Length: 55
Image (cartoon, rainbow, N blue to C red; front, side, top):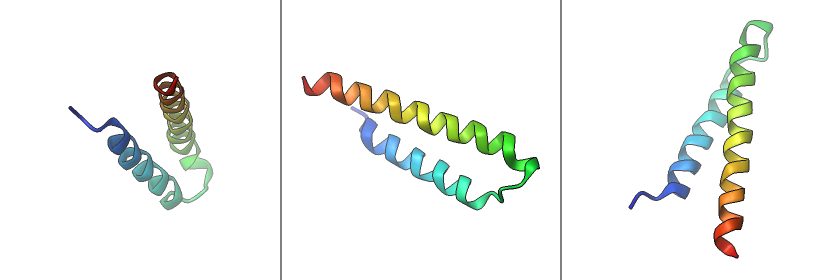
């Protein structure tokens, strides 16, 4: 079985590093926004799933 928590951590760390590497310029704003929103959405989903399995 796949280790979802580990995959989530690897992917989110890479996306976060990519955001840090992108200069905060107007031309990068759309890409930065897409990555940031995806990170927030994935975090919310992961936390919700973790909360559901802990009960």
